[in-house]
Amino acid sequence: MTATYDIETLVGQVRLVIGDTDVHPATDAAFTDEEITYFLTKHSNNIPLAAADALEAWAAKYAANADTEKIGDYSYAQKTVDNMMKLAKQLRDAEAELTEGVPVSTWAEMDLTAGSAITAEEE
Image 1 (cartoon, rainbow, N blue to C red):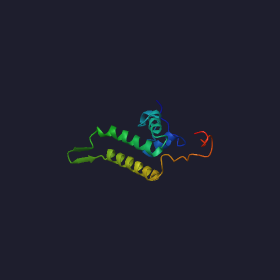
Image 2 (image 1 turned 120 degrees about the vertical axis):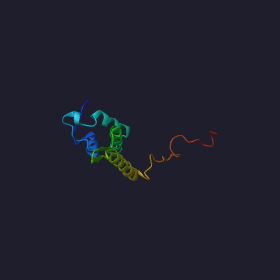
Image 3 (image 1 turned 180 degrees about the vertical axis):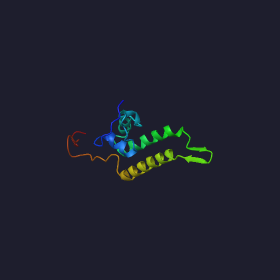
Image 4 (image 1 turned 90 degrees about the vertical axis):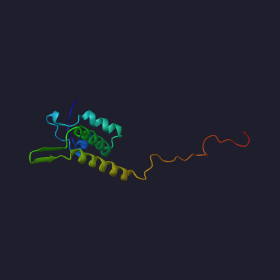
């Protein structure tokens, strides 16, 4: 399993969007290249949607941890999961706005004049 950061690649671009750019040593990366490639493949190389999936998966790791801690007078609140989910939603919403009104496929016109048309004599 590898973890690389090259902004010229789709994997690197997803890493940039989600903030997973510290890959040296590779154990510092939240995702392997193969995991990010899975998200990209799932969404036909759509970077915002792949990044949204990665953020949601990353947030799921943090969700098991306590988000607040209090020791004496000291208290600490962590909003990591909320922030990741908020960014994932923003990415999905922005992508939906870009594709809103764009048909998934277009209608094809049939050419009724070409080929072998049935004539009255053949009927």
